Image (tube, rainbow, N blue to C red; front, side, top):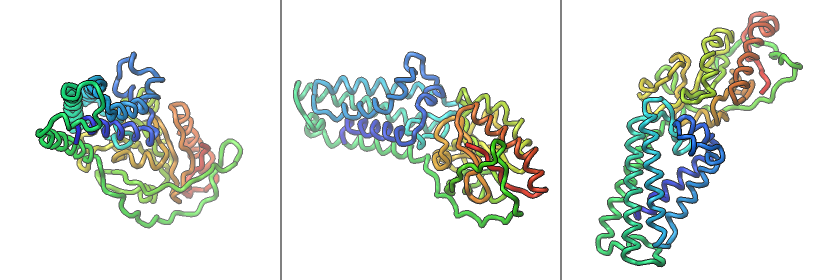
Length: 354
């Protein structure tokens, strides 16, 4: 395996993952405290495409350009490493591979990025050797410049790439367990919409896996005990701070509707190491690899959705601090004024406009 090709593969996977996940790269830059000159909104939007462009440049056959492209890769991965080292104790995710990197930055993340940087340095060396041996021209296969030592070089690159893949794979989690049969609840009349009585559009949600109280469970099992309003928040997200500071206010004000906060988890047993900041640990649903957020359509920070006991959404998803707070206010209004009178004491899932 050529080091140039290995780094190209990493950049291809990174750029593609960001585009597929729909993750807000600007929010990622904010979490990682990227210096202002490099955190312009236009650059953040273009960043996944720039990664794909770099991947293509690493594969091109012009020997004269290989050292330049290799140097760009080294500079980029050195910057990535500096950012994750600085953010290691902040409890934020790096977003390097979209939703697959939803776990908070840990020592494993740092080691993985050290390996990435080592591969980039090898790619730079490979580009320099290729130019020195072949001169300015075309050479589709970079390893031909190493002659008889090509196999040893390829072995070193393959070991480093396999190590990086192993470290990235530690974020994988088991499939969601089968949902337990829902507990029957007293029948109640349809909930009221405070605006005009119209029912919001409702959609089934999948049984994505989350971790509650240290145990894996599915979303269907979670709502078997009652409706749940799920928030996706990050302690490293500036606009989330307005929502986080009001969580205590809403926790006990939503009646039978439970409030839960999706936050990333690195691996089984690692939830104790997650820094939850100002979020009460009892409210946290660990979200392995961001699977639940993706399944619920919560692609940015902050966002919220209301899950009903019938396994259909009852409101949302909504995004942005203002809309999320208004969403919670609407649920509180229904549960404290209109719903009790309408249901005469029975438990129901409020339906809230998205």
